Length: 164
Length: 117
Image (cartoon, rainbow over all chains, first blue to last red; front, top):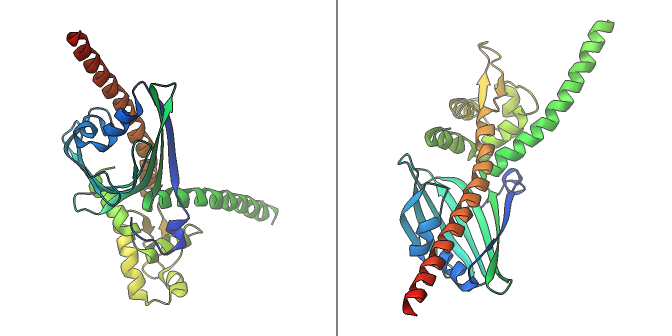
């Protein structure tokens, strides 16, 4: 993940947390994430396929997936595994890039696999979006606060003009 | 928003000086001179940044030749922030598909076992 040295881009992170219970043993669910043949079958939104899917599931190992949308557009992404603890935990970076390899969205994703009711698996995914997407979201929030103040000031100004 | 358009916006936002200019403009419109002041930059250098921001649709500039105030345009920022929603959907739909796939694997496994009996 790119280093950020200005506060505008480090303080803003947006996190997605999703929990699911799968009716499958933990080793199998873990394998579905770390074996390319499995991963290619489910990764991505509905209707997408993954013509390129390379997974080197060990710390420092790479992840490279090219998703193909139903309209034929290809969306490449890359990442690096930070932690691989079978069959419990995966931590990896995931960076969506444009056609020229420039990052569009950077994420840091942690997936934990816990045994549930004996034969099921409870999966918890936590993915933090960092970089410019999070920056844009934060900037908009800041501006909304600013606008509210401006509108208040405008109201005062109009009141003064009327009074004068 | 198309990926091309998004790339242009991202490229414009990738520079910390341009982000600082936007942060200043979030407070209200400003002239090139006003924008140059806090950055210890020449007017032409600031103008260059403003051109990049204008091309990306992140700012609009007034017509008056002398003053030409810049003001923030929020559309592209909103488009980018919307990607967070896409990002959540990406994970939700992926996990939906993982669930379907695991059910398929299990059904296959049970069929195999059934045949063995």
